[in-house]
Image (cartoon, rainbow, N blue to C red; front, side, top):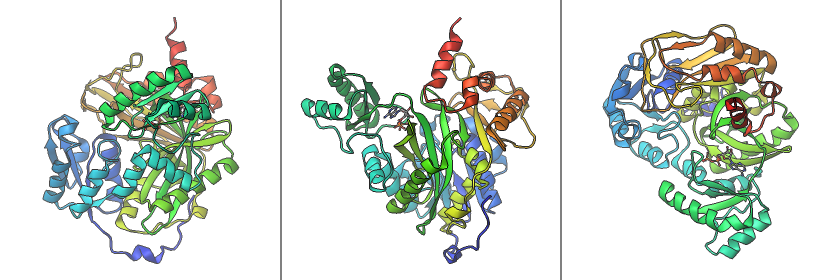
Length: 465
Ligand code: ADP
């Protein structure tokens, strides 16, 4: 457990705000509100018309409807959010995850309005939002990257073919402005290269407004391993261990765990230290996650998320730190109260994302929750905003709860998760609980170290008669 150390002098800085507007919804709005209350900060919650009955709204100091159900007109409406902050006198805005959390223009508008954006500054978000500039920043800090140039692909087809040859097939073409698993294409052999480039360029132009592409080696059987960092605005930064998020369906994480199984501390520690160095070099503030592909004992940086992540609780369980409170304190200008030597991760944690969706077709399922039983007991935590009578809206992401467990060993944590899932009952809508239960019975998953393709292959096998 981290030891409380004397608070450094820099933390005597006058706190920059005493109330926070939470520019988000659902479980993360409830989670951020809990952290604000623990820090004695007033909270302003906002909602769309579909979320008027949100329980976290009732416990907020102010609760405002900022627009219609469509997210583009409410949770993504920058002007409405800034107006809500002005009307309620909020001093800071917490963007949560998704929506405007990685929007550099919003971070800038918040600061220009004289408010604090609870996250890194717009410059850091912009550097990491462009995959080539992110790669350059990582190389400069000594963070290992996927083989391939840190420059955009030229227009000349023969120069592009030469780059692919140097990297070696298969390669992956990616949009520099891409995100959400879109704007990338794998090319297995030289004959497919030309068409693949043309298609990806056009997709990138339409989806991201930029046709710029780059190329890197396509790794065949990687695991998704990520490193959580925490930085203050005084140049201090720590990394809080690692997570494995390889259980993915369509690039969406389904189950996350900390620590990543089977990875020796001696292999990952230099990578964690390089992440810390990268944060210090770009002047990063707040929490962030460095995502890596891990194959044959080597790490390859793919991207940095400059925000709080859905899976932050597994790191909270192992590190004993409240990551959301730490993030808010960093935005207050308070210096980190811990150094790397104080960080110690214990036991094992899993998180299951409970989605309102059909367990077979994965189509999202809206409707009223008619009955609810959430698991409880030692080592079990549930992050959620739902309750009996809650209406699951079709407008947003299908995530309705996160079941998180913590136990001394991975095997014990799996057992606790099996029990927790068995005790979870959500009536009135379809959920993926049965699917998660089946996954927690799987032998290869129980052994650990499965790659990012495992879940899709497992689903294919299951669907065969
Ligand atoms: P996005 O920003 O769209 O999420 P990422 O660069 O994080 O894009 O990649 C998303 C996913 O695509 C990764 O989690 C991984 O499954 C796959 N991927 C990306 N780059 C590679 C690569 N070089 N080799 C193999 N798979 C990759």
